[in-house]
Length: 120
Image (cartoon, rainbow, N blue to C red):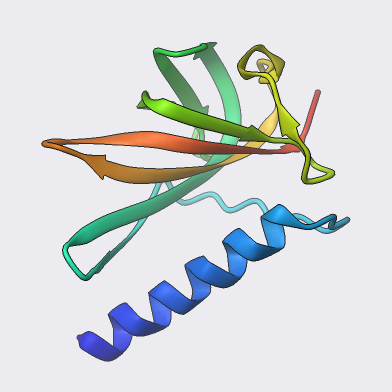
C-alpha cells in the first residue's frame, strides 16, 4: 500500500511538472477521478469535457460517460492553458477538454487547478 502511494505521488509530481512546462501532447481519460492518499493529504484528478462552469464556484465535466460529474472550485484556483501559461478563470469554456487537480480542503474535496488541454 505504501509503495502504491509512493508511485502515485511520483506520477502526480511528474504530471504537475510537465503541466508547468510547454508541452504539445495531452491525454484525456474517461474515468471520473483517481485518488492518491499520501502523508495525510489527499489528491485526486479527473479529466473530461466541460459541460458547465461557474468561475469561483463549480465545474461539471463529462468524463466520457454522458453523465456529468460536479466539482467545487477551491478558493485558490489556478487555470493553466495548453501552452502551460496561466489563464484567467473566465477562460475556461464549455466543451473544452480539461484535466482537474483536486485537493482536500477541510472536510471537502475541491479543485485547485484546471489544466485546459483543448479549448473549443
